[in-house]
Every structure is written in C-alpha cells, then in structure tokens.
Amino acid sequence: MEYNVIVVSPVKTKVEVKVPAEEANAALTATVAIYRQKADFKGFRKGKVPSSVVESRFRKEIVGEATNDLLNVHINEIMAELKKSPFSRIDVDQVELVKDQPLDYTFEFEHAPAFELPAYIGLEVEEEEAVVSEKDIEAVIERIRGNLAELTPLAENRPAKDGEVVSLSFEAFEDGVPVPGVRAENFQLTLGEAQALPDFEALVKTVPSGGQGEGQMTFPEDFINQALAGKTVTMKVAVHVIKEKKLPPLDDAMAQKAGHFESLERMREAITMSYQKSRQDLHKAAAQKKLLDGILEKLDFPLPEALVETHLGQLIDDFVERLERRGKSLESTGKTLEGLRTEFREQAESIARTQIFLMNVAEKEGLEVDPREMDQYFNQLSQKTGQDVLTLKQYYEQNNMVIPVRDKLLADKAVELIYSKANVKKVPGADATAAASAAVGEGTKEEAGE
View 1 (tube, rainbow, N blue to C red):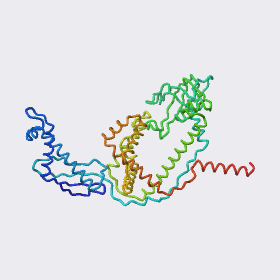
View 2: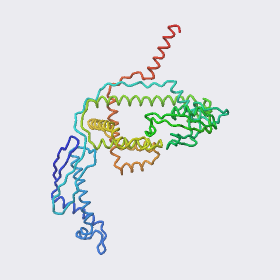
View 3: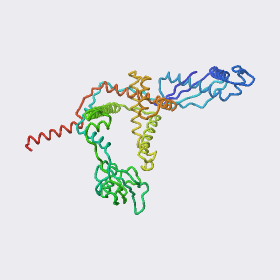
C-alpha cells in the first residue's frame, strides 16, 4: 500500500491510496477463509466447503467485508503515521475490491490546524476571595424554612400578600376574544417570588379569596413568547383559595427535619461550608476563564467546520431542551432553527477554538485520561441521571461519544494545569467590597456625630 497526502486547507487533508493487486487478493482470500469456517452447506463437513462454492454463495458479503476491513487497516495506519485526530467523519470513496486488480481510493477528514502555542505558564490573574456573609446563611435558612412551611387557608377574607400562595384561574382576552395559550385552571402562584409578571401579580393582589377581577396588562418586549411580546391584553382572574405559610420554629427539630442534622448549629455549619465551597469553585472558574480568554485573544487560526457544527448542534439542542423543561416549544418563542444557528454561531466557534487550544496543551504536557477517571465520570453521571452505569457506558460507546468525553476530561486537565501554574492574586469579592464600603460609611457617620 502506498499513499500520497494532499493538504486541502489548514484544517482539511486528503489522502490518495494505491493498493496493489497482490494485497487486494490477500484481503479477499482471508475473508473467504473466515466464511469457509462458518459456512454450513448440505453435503459438506463444516470448514471443508470448497472456496469456489463459498465465493459463489457469499460473493457480495465477502467483497464488502474484505473491502471494509482492508480500508480500516489502511486508514488507521495512515492516521497513526500522520499523527492527526479527525474532528469529522472520515469521508471515503465508495469502492470495492476486485480479484487480481489494484485498488485506488481517496479519503478526506477535518482536523485541528497547526499553530504555535503562546505562553500559558506563569500568567497573572485576579481571583475574587470567597466571602460568605451571615446574611447569605440566613437567606438559605429562611428558604429551607419556607420549604418546610405548612400552608393554611387565610382566616380573613382579603387579597393575598407577598409570601402567600394563591390558587387561581386566569385567561387573557384581546378585543373580547380569548388569547390562545394564555389560560390556566387552579394555577398555584407564590406571590413575591417573581414567578409571574409584575402586572399579573399586582392584579392578583387586588382580588380576595372567592373573588374575581380583571385588568389591562402589557407583555414585555422581550417576552419569551414573541407572539405576545409588547401586546396589551385584558387579563381576567378568579382567586379560589389564599393560603399563608406557617413557618416552623428555628430550632434543632427543624434542622433534623431539613436534612437530618443533629442541631441547628450543625446545619448552619454545613450551609456555610457548602456555600464557601460553591463560591470558591465559582471564583476559580471565573479566574480560569480570564486566563483562557487572555490566551485566546492572541490566537488566530482556522476552525474545522465539522467541530463548529458539533458544538453548534449541542448548543441548539440544549436551548430547545431547556424550553421543553419549561413546557414551551421553539415555535412559541418566535425563533427558528436557522435563527438559532446564527445566534449561537459565535459561541460555538469560541468553544471549538478553546477545545483545540486545550487539546494542544494536553498533548504538549503529556496529559492523559486513565480508565479510572473515565469510570469516575460515568459513575457521577449515573448518580446525576439515575441511570445504570453499564447502560450509560453502552449508550456512549454505541453512539461514538466516548472519545468526546475523554477529550473533555483532557481539556479540563489542561485548564487545571494552566491555573495551577498561574500567579493567582486574591482580591476582595464584590460582597466583601460592599461590606467594607458600608462599614466605612457607618464609621464616617459616627465621626460626624450622626
């Protein structure tokens, strides 16, 4: 086998392959031998069927398998010698082996461009310190209390207030005609938590339990349902029941009920640690993004279209999935798939550029992902999704998704390496700065005798 490499572009390579007749015959003969061992013909012992009989009976299958096997061997050898990892499906000519004849074919694939890595070791970056205030902790505790609250119907007949839960029905009208899709029965709404548009909540707050009301409301220009954006309608509501939340006492019993904590103090400590870790991770991720953004600003290289398309498709799928989780369709937003392609194109290109850079760093630094790390990834995914680990692995293998997972873990390692080698300067976080400013303000008032 001989081959010739043609550089189509910085991100696309074409390979011309020439296979001599002797190699083609060897591939066909080897496949015939396999079929002889498997073939079961009446009048012949298994494995003793003449080759000519096997070839006549299974000619199409033999030629197809021999061709595929030989091409796969060639392509794997060539790719290993070229040291290139394809970002796209390898496009191969439709060819077949013919006995006693040479075979010529070509294949094309997209890959990462060659470029010189910029400096990525010893860079400087600022990272906010993780500050957790008492106010943050109290807010979490109050949310927990709210989740454990008992709902009891109001004893007095009055409109609802913030923090109360209203069971209601509503429908929108335009010129006396019902507006499609803006209607619900026995809808549960907690006031004051931004679960509905402000105008809608304001209307609900004017209607007592068992009462009805109506009012004009205008949907915002950026409303998710573009068919309603900027439109003014008459909203009619009927309030069935208003319930108030009876918060549990802030004590050890509540802590035990909330998460089996032995005491309120232990719950507070756990919340503080969790909040601290969460903010540390958040600020670290922000610092890592700053590092990457700074590096990528200095890089300019062409992108494999197949890789951009992969990330573009993922971004669109994620967007549509988020809509569906909220009970909405793409059509209800007034957007189209073509519009989403334009909207997400720049983001997809940014992700592709970052991936190529990080994979180059991983290769230069000799980073690897071992089987245990892959197992850990699937175990965590199993816990998150509730699916069986083996089922997940089989799905990823059958859909050629294992290599992208490995590449993601490699990219994560490359980011961690760049961050670990950076000069990270801790700076006060936004919350700490605000607290310091408030303290200075209070001190100034005291000095002024206020």
